[in-house]
Length: 200
Figure 1 (tube, rainbow, N blue to C red):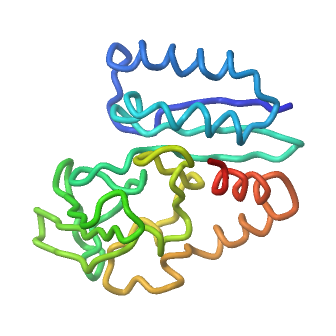
Figure 2 (figure 1 turned 180 degrees about the horizontal axis):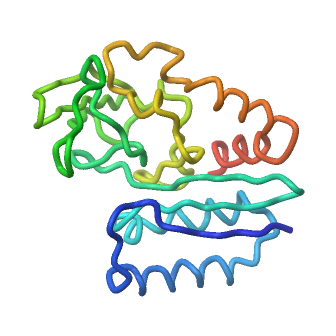
């Protein structure tokens, strides 16, 4: 069995905008009656685009004594991509964009050849193109075309995904996340991650 808590990770979420969808989410969780946390999360969130349009959601759960934290969100350019809250990738990290300053353009949407780039209205920065399939710390939820998930929280290095100095290390994350991955190999998550990736 497992314990599960769901919370909003977006900014300024208003209860009246999410209450009906939240009740539907709770209904899915309680009527699903799955004893496997990964199956429950997959089935629940692949049908939750409406509430995820309001705010990303974080699932915090405990299974077999281990704690997992996963954020689910929408991939919907031009406003947000890959379910993650990212920073401006301009060199030096000096740009501090406000709400709506970061926009995204994508090609070949919804296909294995999809690529994305970031543009910052505040400083004028335009990134190079990045393919979601080359970012190993974000995963498309099986059965969905727009819902992605990743471990929560992401690192500052991962938030600079569109930086021109992003290399393989940046795409994979910082040492703390590597350590988290190693811890997961000792318990539930490495099995669960692979199960969620492969589940149809």
